[in-house]
Image (cartoon, rainbow, N blue to C red):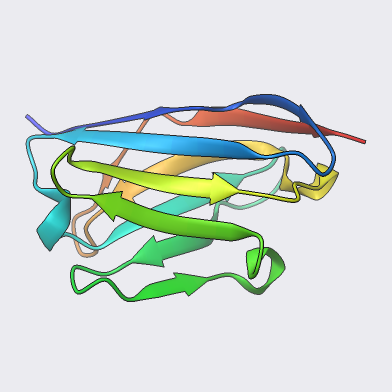
Length: 114
């Protein structure tokens, strides 16, 4: 059984930092394309960052230079380091594994106050 469990969300002031974690079980994150998505109220879920099995990373323009995705294969965990947070980063953040038949976590709330 595959499980993705996100953690690390919370309330932070504008300019602050958070680190999200996605702990996986049932699949090795080392061979999966892993991604972080977010969904704000009334908006569609959007890609924030992804890391390929080969370690290539990709970011949506609005977070480039502020967010960093990384992977710890030994801990089977993917991270999203978020710096210089802005109120518009407020959303539920989801972890995704795979492409064609992806697995999703339950999400973690990130709220950035102005």
